[in-house]
Length: 266
Image 1 (tube, rainbow, N blue to C red):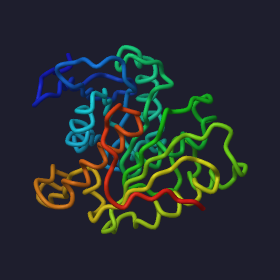
Image 2 (cartoon, rainbow, N blue to C red):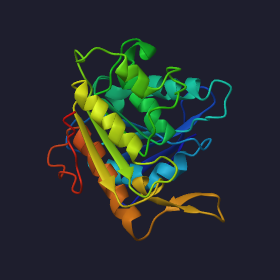
Image 3 (tube, helix red, strand yellow):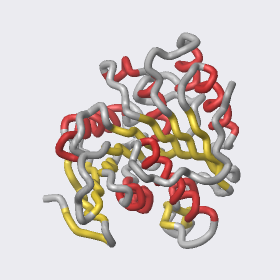
Protein backbone atom coordinates (compact mmCIF):
# COMPACT_ATOMS: atom_id res chain seq x y z
CA UNK A 1 0.00 0.00 0.00
CA UNK A 2 1.29 3.51 -0.75
CA UNK A 3 2.51 5.50 2.25
CA UNK A 4 0.51 8.71 2.75
CA UNK A 5 1.54 11.45 5.13
CA UNK A 6 1.79 15.22 5.36
CA UNK A 7 4.97 17.29 5.53
CA UNK A 8 4.45 21.01 6.23
CA UNK A 9 1.45 21.84 4.02
CA UNK A 10 2.09 19.14 1.44
CA UNK A 11 0.41 15.76 1.35
CA UNK A 12 2.77 13.14 -0.10
CA UNK A 13 1.53 9.80 -1.33
CA UNK A 14 4.64 7.67 -1.69
CA UNK A 15 5.29 4.43 -3.51
CA UNK A 16 2.36 4.39 -5.92
CA UNK A 17 2.79 1.63 -8.56
CA UNK A 18 2.78 3.10 -12.06
CA UNK A 19 3.58 0.09 -14.24
CA UNK A 20 6.84 -1.37 -15.57
CA UNK A 21 7.72 -2.29 -11.98
CA UNK A 22 8.22 1.38 -11.10
CA UNK A 23 6.88 3.55 -8.27
CA UNK A 24 6.04 7.23 -8.05
CA UNK A 25 5.20 9.84 -5.46
CA UNK A 26 2.29 12.29 -5.67
CA UNK A 27 2.52 15.71 -4.00
CA UNK A 28 -0.54 17.83 -3.23
CA UNK A 29 -1.03 20.97 -1.23
CA UNK A 30 -2.96 20.64 2.04
CA UNK A 31 -5.58 21.70 2.67
CA UNK A 32 -6.80 21.14 -0.85
CA UNK A 33 -8.82 23.80 -2.58
CA UNK A 34 -8.66 26.45 -5.22
CA UNK A 35 -10.37 24.46 -7.94
CA UNK A 36 -8.97 22.35 -10.78
CA UNK A 37 -5.39 22.98 -11.89
CA UNK A 38 -2.88 21.44 -14.30
CA UNK A 39 -0.89 18.42 -13.20
CA UNK A 40 2.92 18.40 -13.29
CA UNK A 41 4.84 15.29 -14.34
CA UNK A 42 8.40 15.75 -13.08
CA UNK A 43 11.24 13.47 -14.25
CA UNK A 44 14.58 13.07 -12.47
CA UNK A 45 17.94 12.77 -14.20
CA UNK A 46 20.29 9.97 -15.17
CA UNK A 47 20.64 8.38 -11.72
CA UNK A 48 18.52 5.20 -11.57
CA UNK A 49 15.34 5.43 -9.47
CA UNK A 50 16.14 8.81 -7.91
CA UNK A 51 12.70 10.31 -7.49
CA UNK A 52 13.67 11.28 -3.93
CA UNK A 53 16.18 13.90 -5.14
CA UNK A 54 13.25 15.91 -6.53
CA UNK A 55 11.33 16.04 -3.26
CA UNK A 56 12.40 19.58 -2.36
CA UNK A 57 11.38 20.90 -5.77
CA UNK A 58 8.16 18.88 -5.78
CA UNK A 59 7.10 20.22 -2.37
CA UNK A 60 7.78 23.79 -3.44
CA UNK A 61 5.88 23.30 -6.70
CA UNK A 62 2.92 21.70 -4.95
CA UNK A 63 2.81 24.78 -2.74
CA UNK A 64 1.39 26.68 -5.72
CA UNK A 65 -1.67 24.45 -5.63
CA UNK A 66 -0.45 22.01 -8.26
CA UNK A 67 -0.43 18.22 -8.12
CA UNK A 68 3.08 16.96 -8.84
CA UNK A 69 3.78 13.40 -9.98
CA UNK A 70 7.40 12.22 -9.54
CA UNK A 71 8.19 8.75 -10.89
CA UNK A 72 11.26 6.55 -10.74
CA UNK A 73 12.91 5.50 -13.98
CA UNK A 74 16.16 3.83 -14.94
CA UNK A 75 18.46 5.22 -17.60
CA UNK A 76 20.48 1.99 -17.41
CA UNK A 77 17.55 -0.13 -18.62
CA UNK A 78 18.08 -1.86 -21.99
CA UNK A 79 15.83 0.71 -23.69
CA UNK A 80 17.44 3.64 -21.89
CA UNK A 81 14.38 4.10 -19.69
CA UNK A 82 11.90 4.69 -22.52
CA UNK A 83 9.26 2.29 -21.16
CA UNK A 84 9.54 3.76 -17.66
CA UNK A 85 9.23 7.37 -18.86
CA UNK A 86 6.34 6.69 -21.21
CA UNK A 87 4.67 4.46 -18.60
CA UNK A 88 4.66 7.33 -16.12
CA UNK A 89 3.25 9.61 -18.80
CA UNK A 90 0.47 7.11 -19.54
CA UNK A 91 -0.26 6.86 -15.80
CA UNK A 92 -0.52 10.63 -15.46
CA UNK A 93 -2.60 11.12 -18.59
CA UNK A 94 -5.05 8.38 -17.60
CA UNK A 95 -5.52 9.89 -14.13
CA UNK A 96 -5.21 13.58 -14.96
CA UNK A 97 -8.82 14.39 -14.11
CA UNK A 98 -8.53 12.76 -10.71
CA UNK A 99 -5.11 14.24 -10.00
CA UNK A 100 -5.53 17.87 -10.94
CA UNK A 101 -9.13 18.03 -12.01
CA UNK A 102 -8.40 18.82 -15.65
CA UNK A 103 -8.05 16.66 -18.77
CA UNK A 104 -4.79 15.21 -20.05
CA UNK A 105 -4.11 18.25 -22.21
CA UNK A 106 -3.43 20.19 -18.98
CA UNK A 107 -0.19 18.42 -18.01
CA UNK A 108 3.08 20.30 -17.63
CA UNK A 109 6.08 18.11 -18.47
CA UNK A 110 9.11 19.04 -16.41
CA UNK A 111 12.46 17.38 -15.90
CA UNK A 112 15.99 17.77 -14.63
CA UNK A 113 19.02 16.96 -16.76
CA UNK A 114 18.24 13.86 -18.83
CA UNK A 115 14.64 14.00 -17.62
CA UNK A 116 14.39 17.53 -18.98
CA UNK A 117 15.84 16.46 -22.30
CA UNK A 118 13.21 13.74 -22.57
CA UNK A 119 10.44 16.22 -21.77
CA UNK A 120 11.74 18.52 -24.50
CA UNK A 121 11.89 15.66 -26.98
CA UNK A 122 8.22 14.80 -26.51
CA UNK A 123 7.14 18.39 -27.10
CA UNK A 124 9.23 18.62 -30.26
CA UNK A 125 8.23 15.15 -31.50
CA UNK A 126 4.61 14.56 -30.42
CA UNK A 127 4.40 11.67 -32.89
CA UNK A 128 6.43 9.67 -30.35
CA UNK A 129 3.39 9.70 -28.03
CA UNK A 130 0.57 9.43 -30.54
CA UNK A 131 0.37 13.16 -31.20
CA UNK A 132 -0.22 14.17 -27.57
CA UNK A 133 1.16 17.57 -26.57
CA UNK A 134 1.83 18.89 -23.05
CA UNK A 135 0.45 22.20 -21.84
CA UNK A 136 4.03 23.42 -21.38
CA UNK A 137 7.54 22.08 -20.82
CA UNK A 138 10.05 23.09 -18.14
CA UNK A 139 13.65 21.90 -18.54
CA UNK A 140 16.17 22.23 -15.71
CA UNK A 141 19.88 21.91 -16.45
CA UNK A 142 19.24 19.89 -19.60
CA UNK A 143 21.31 19.15 -22.69
CA UNK A 144 19.58 19.07 -26.06
CA UNK A 145 22.15 17.75 -28.53
CA UNK A 146 22.23 14.25 -27.03
CA UNK A 147 19.88 11.41 -27.94
CA UNK A 148 16.80 10.73 -25.84
CA UNK A 149 15.29 7.31 -25.13
CA UNK A 150 11.74 8.50 -25.83
CA UNK A 151 12.32 9.48 -29.47
CA UNK A 152 15.73 8.08 -30.40
CA UNK A 153 16.81 11.52 -31.59
CA UNK A 154 18.01 14.74 -30.01
CA UNK A 155 15.59 17.62 -29.34
CA UNK A 156 17.74 20.19 -31.06
CA UNK A 157 18.17 18.14 -34.25
CA UNK A 158 14.48 17.26 -34.34
CA UNK A 159 13.55 20.91 -33.81
CA UNK A 160 15.97 22.06 -36.50
CA UNK A 161 14.39 19.61 -38.94
CA UNK A 162 10.92 21.12 -38.50
CA UNK A 163 9.48 23.90 -40.61
CA UNK A 164 10.14 27.56 -39.91
CA UNK A 165 7.10 27.87 -37.66
CA UNK A 166 5.30 25.20 -35.64
CA UNK A 167 1.50 25.09 -36.11
CA UNK A 168 0.87 24.81 -32.35
CA UNK A 169 4.15 25.40 -30.50
CA UNK A 170 4.40 24.32 -26.87
CA UNK A 171 5.63 27.01 -24.43
CA UNK A 172 9.07 26.27 -22.95
CA UNK A 173 10.66 27.42 -19.70
CA UNK A 174 14.37 26.69 -19.24
CA UNK A 175 16.47 27.10 -16.09
CA UNK A 176 20.24 26.59 -16.14
CA UNK A 177 23.11 27.19 -13.74
CA UNK A 178 25.95 29.35 -14.99
CA UNK A 179 28.34 27.26 -12.85
CA UNK A 180 27.14 23.96 -14.34
CA UNK A 181 30.14 21.84 -15.37
CA UNK A 182 28.05 18.76 -16.21
CA UNK A 183 25.90 20.49 -18.83
CA UNK A 184 27.27 23.96 -19.69
CA UNK A 185 24.74 26.78 -19.80
CA UNK A 186 25.51 27.22 -23.50
CA UNK A 187 23.26 24.19 -24.12
CA UNK A 188 20.15 26.04 -22.94
CA UNK A 189 21.18 29.25 -24.67
CA UNK A 190 21.50 27.45 -27.99
CA UNK A 191 18.21 25.58 -27.61
CA UNK A 192 16.34 28.70 -26.48
CA UNK A 193 17.59 30.62 -29.49
CA UNK A 194 16.51 27.87 -31.87
CA UNK A 195 13.08 27.61 -30.23
CA UNK A 196 12.62 31.35 -30.68
CA UNK A 197 13.65 31.20 -34.34
CA UNK A 198 11.12 28.43 -34.90
CA UNK A 199 8.33 30.47 -33.31
CA UNK A 200 8.08 28.58 -30.00
CA UNK A 201 7.41 30.67 -26.86
CA UNK A 202 10.49 30.33 -24.64
CA UNK A 203 11.88 31.85 -21.47
CA UNK A 204 15.39 31.14 -20.22
CA UNK A 205 16.49 31.85 -16.66
CA UNK A 206 20.15 31.61 -15.68
CA UNK A 207 21.19 31.24 -12.06
CA UNK A 208 24.61 31.38 -10.34
CA UNK A 209 24.56 27.72 -9.34
CA UNK A 210 25.68 24.31 -10.56
CA UNK A 211 23.96 21.29 -12.12
CA UNK A 212 22.33 20.14 -8.89
CA UNK A 213 21.52 23.62 -7.68
CA UNK A 214 18.80 24.26 -10.27
CA UNK A 215 16.58 21.78 -8.40
CA UNK A 216 17.53 23.09 -4.97
CA UNK A 217 19.95 20.33 -4.00
CA UNK A 218 23.68 19.91 -3.55
CA UNK A 219 25.84 16.85 -4.13
CA UNK A 220 26.88 14.99 -0.99
CA UNK A 221 30.07 12.98 -1.72
CA UNK A 222 29.54 10.79 1.34
CA UNK A 223 26.01 9.83 0.33
CA UNK A 224 27.00 9.84 -3.35
CA UNK A 225 23.73 11.57 -4.24
CA UNK A 226 21.97 14.91 -4.03
CA UNK A 227 20.60 16.22 -0.75
CA UNK A 228 18.47 19.33 -0.09
CA UNK A 229 20.48 22.55 -0.13
CA UNK A 230 20.24 24.60 3.05
CA UNK A 231 21.98 27.81 2.00
CA UNK A 232 23.45 29.68 -0.92
CA UNK A 233 22.47 30.08 -4.58
CA UNK A 234 21.03 26.55 -4.85
CA UNK A 235 18.20 27.44 -2.48
CA UNK A 236 17.18 30.46 -4.54
CA UNK A 237 17.59 28.55 -7.81
CA UNK A 238 15.39 25.71 -6.64
CA UNK A 239 12.70 28.16 -5.56
CA UNK A 240 12.89 29.88 -8.93
CA UNK A 241 12.51 26.54 -10.74
CA UNK A 242 9.33 25.86 -8.76
CA UNK A 243 8.00 29.29 -9.71
CA UNK A 244 8.83 28.67 -13.35
CA UNK A 245 6.82 25.44 -13.28
CA UNK A 246 3.90 27.27 -11.67
CA UNK A 247 4.18 30.01 -14.27
CA UNK A 248 4.18 27.42 -17.06
CA UNK A 249 1.04 25.89 -15.53
CA UNK A 250 -0.65 29.28 -15.59
CA UNK A 251 -1.21 29.41 -11.84
CA UNK A 252 -3.07 32.67 -11.10
CA UNK A 253 -0.96 34.97 -9.01
CA UNK A 254 2.28 33.00 -9.41
CA UNK A 255 5.01 35.62 -9.06
CA UNK A 256 7.04 36.28 -12.17
CA UNK A 257 10.39 34.51 -12.00
CA UNK A 258 13.09 37.06 -11.17
CA UNK A 259 16.67 37.08 -12.40
CA UNK A 260 18.25 37.08 -15.80
CA UNK A 261 15.18 36.03 -17.73
CA UNK A 262 15.69 36.08 -21.47
CA UNK A 263 13.17 35.99 -24.27
CA UNK A 264 15.40 35.09 -27.23
CA UNK A 265 14.43 36.78 -30.45
CA UNK A 266 16.51 34.72 -32.83
